[in-house]
Length: 279
Image 1 (cartoon, helix red, strand yellow):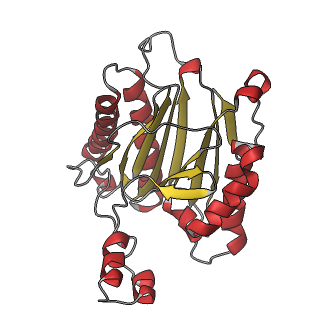
Image 2 (cartoon, one colour):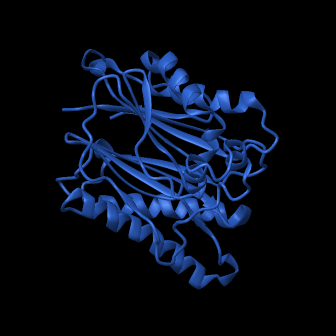
């Protein structure tokens, strides 16, 4: 049976509040009422809230909690479960806004990933990146629903410069989010992606993108052998070390397939503010 080690770490950055939420669920800890065929050994979900201090924090927490709850009470094909879990998160926000119109405008991004024998599958909305580290390389797995890809296409077409695209204030505007309304864009994995020994899956809020992909790759490579806690800690330390005066909240979840030889005794001890475990 496959075992997955995971850890999460977060920083408020330059803000005085935290609008990111990260949650994990494991089949090992499932309640007896959970479906016998869970479809996943581990479910990880991360959301980056928007709508002001109170609204953004509430939206991200509700989205993650509703997603996990919906996934664990379903059965059937995994893609269907992912879509229904996303819909449950969206309904939870809609119901909250209906009950308290003062929260209108709140919402969040969401990336939910399942880890099982067939590999990983995901659903995502917004610009929270889902990254694969494999054999020294890093790749973005999900679609970016911000305006950044559109601006980058204008650079490729020679219509604006790379510096203009990077500095454009619209760069982080979202084309799709979980707000309780119809969701404009949803990225759903076409098929399970097999996980290989040595791979890391990184879920993150867009605050991690203070680091470029080369630096993220370098950090994961440097700490990969030390486990998920070490990788998550190192990524957030690197964000904090830049001391960007406009640093957004940054949150990461790092997950890896536990090496076969390490499984009988694997543990994941976390530093203050971290979460780590192996399932």
